[in-house]
Amino acid sequence: MRFGNWEITENGIVGHNEMRLFEVTRENLEYLRNNSLDMLIHISEKSNVDAKEVFNLNMAFIYALGKFGIESISEVHMANTVQIQNKMV
Image: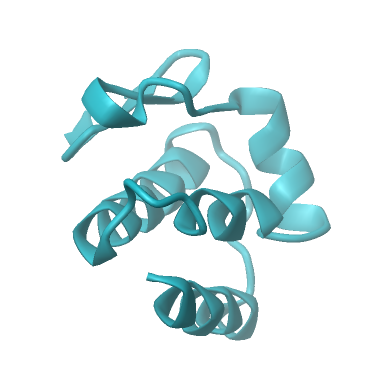
């Protein structure tokens, strides 16, 4: 499955084209869910990332959580992350 430049593979989320330097491994998805969505925020800080890329990344992240059977993150946590991302792009 692919959301813009973000593809969900068996290994996690892989960036393509201008996002090719970014990857969130399957193992890191569990870590992000339990601790912080800092990786999603970190990617949002990059100069080549616009609002559409951030939206697609977030959709890929949520899809990947379901695909790998990782219990979903709290809505509040995701909403806070999106709010921070929006300020950065």
